[in-house]
Image (cartoon, rainbow, N blue to C red; front, side, top):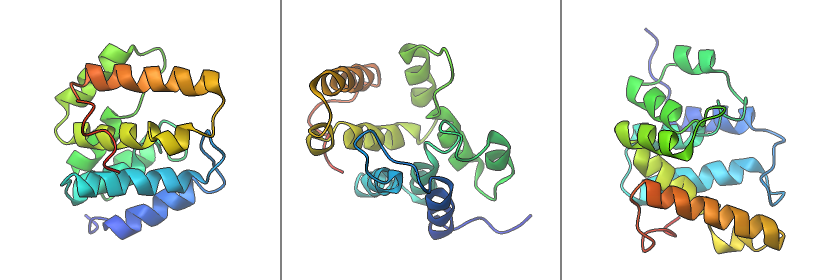
Length: 155
């Protein structure tokens, strides 16, 4: 078996995979990935969780394939976290939250993701209807995951 990818190598792969993509505010998508990885780090996450943070949207956004993830030189835990936070077509928020909660290490990655997604500075550039819809969506997911409001904006 080949040696495991380092966090720096995972970051480079994620940045390359999302090259040219932008977020809802028109910013380079890699900025979101960096913010989530940093959010995981400041919340006490380990290298496996930080690697998963860099890859957290890669399969969902078709930036990388599920086969790539399966074959990547990553720990099973990192792969499981990425798969746990990958939304599936037709899945209810309750089912999604249940999978995140059932997967060791995934909640911290999702918490950092939600914190960055709900950052008022990011939301401020969106139109009012989108901002309201997303704010409600993120608040509902935080509630389903049992996350309090006080720890929301550490990223």
